[in-house]
Image 1 (cartoon, each protein chain N blue to C red):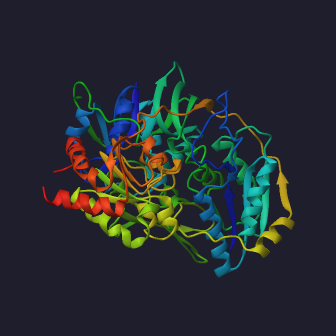
Image 2 (tube, rainbow over the protein chains, first blue to last red):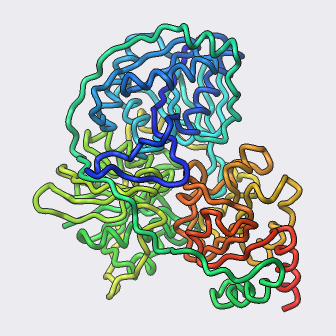
Length: 250
Length: 316
């Protein structure tokens, strides 16, 4: 089973997000970088599949040269090969991103492409679907359980209290969500191997898209510091009154 | 101007997230709803100002098939001359609109909170990034604007005057390729199913201390007619299943009340609960970030406060 996993370098946001003065980027002076939990799970899922069924895992990112850090992170977890589609700092939209990934997929005999359900930063919810259409492959999204055989995959998710099962012939694209597995921690030998591994590089084609970012901003919160009703169990009568006022007690 | 809106059902009635999308759609033109169902919730849709309903019955298309749904929307958009096609920013809404974007080659903006026509083929919009922790002001240039509406930001408001609604049974022509990926549905296990639509959510975080600590939260949730939701650390530790997670990588909730117990309030968690009408925090730390997002707080140990609250509610 030849699997490609797509990941994206994003700032690690902790207590607060702030935007640069020109409103074009988030302020990353104090932050590290990571990939989203959905993508950590995509890497783990791919590694588990090849541990069971053989084959290899390639990991791809479209981003700046610094994103090699995230590729090495995935190699340390058991991916075998890394591909950097190196950008020049411009933000790629979902259409150009899907086209760039499709070019890599066409160049090698992949059976399965895994992505996170949505990128943590842009939240476009569409790269996996657009990639599948570019390739003419079937796609399932938001998947939290995946079983793979030589004929195809069965991908499951839950929606409004109903379990949905999708049977997809291979090759296929599947986007996954956190919860599909518990990602492992990198091993020391894994980290050493990742450090030495070569990274294949190419330059993807950027194109303008019909959706254009003008500025980012932090939403104004309707909430301000909470009114403290009291300390410990002494606050319970006041708490009950508030619940009554809110109309949540029947 | 016609605006096509995919409406999902929750039982026999429109899903709350879809009514929010219809509310936004109404500001753009005459709302034509598209429903994959055997019957339309006619009165509710009329009250929300929907003028036309296209009903795709189960005899024409059985089961959820995202690409087929998108193909139907593409056909109806062309037929009605729609200037925009929208859906709720649910798993299905985002998925179907992504397929529609791919089928038509048009851009799609996910999780919008505001859309304004700006002449010709231009729409100005505001959309979520970082699951709503940031807003993006953007411009969309496209012959048909495709977007989904954030499920936790736009309020659903009925129309000033109900519409005279017409229901059309639509029989789409579908290719075999559009039906390759189709859901086989079966009832899922209990728990987490109603998190997205619950009226009360009792949240538990690291402060709960372990899996056994959730019994008291479950009891409180039941008393309040609600469900339990948890923070990411709780699912990462395996204390509760992932489907109960509230947050950026879990479920976005929109209850009347979110009672956050022992949750510090990382921003990824706030992204999931910011749509709650009221937030009350119970936390030992009066400096916890969650207090900056809450209406009320009780400072103290949830292991003492929750049993006392349960007792007080039972005594009423």
